[in-house]
Image (cartoon, rainbow, N blue to C red; front, side):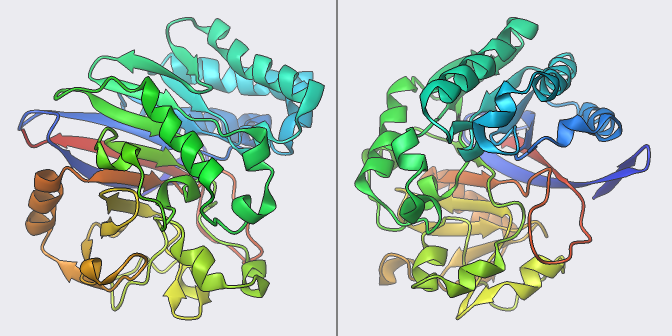
Length: 359
């Protein structure tokens, strides 16, 4: 849905997430955005973004990393930092705000990183009890338990991992360790607010955090609704593409027709720039819910890891199977600020997640 606020347009993408944690007839709404990259420095756009989120009437708001544009240098800029503070403060008057760090917030290391981390944490002082910047920590708000995951500088700065999305033990171990913060429960919706979906969708992983079915939804960004065309020159692009839980090949599916989603095809793998992937043990993708509202099932599920053959299935059939297997959801938002060499006509994305009770 396209929403226009004071001549600034936004793409409102709505996903319905069935959950066994809520009773029939009940539901909760969450707004997910990511990749501001200094979008808040434009006053007109900042005001419009606040209003576009206000009308969604969310239980809470998650900003999943990359708040600044060029790593930690921008965190040191008092003007840019104040603009971010103004945005977060106004959003916190609408609903509680949870923030996680992205690669642009982590890169840098040393003294600058210490300052950046402290300024990130200091956002909580703007409206105590309503703003929660999380660095490997959690907050509980009503039925929700939200963990903010931050990978190490060593991990995030490794270009073979960060750029290619190749599974590495350290990456996986750090994500698994984030499970120690989770208490969970039959009536508690557990969200992990991260940034980079490669961490969730690593195709070779088979880790306890997935098997224990602790997490209901991983909230991610990073992709900016498109992939760089330069990825065509990378070695083994199929490996890169199948490593992410949100990147699959879907045959003959109805499409919203965005330029990036139609154009970026690598070999036999087509990149889906946004959507919800349902996974079991963090190694196999069972379903995809696209932004056209349809479910696709992986018909090749038992043929081996990273083998996928997607077929359109009935919505009720998919939902019942998702509930019975207690599958995780991985929700990837397209980003507020767009980065792509491909000419774009679509707007900054605000992702709206509606948890629908199935208990």
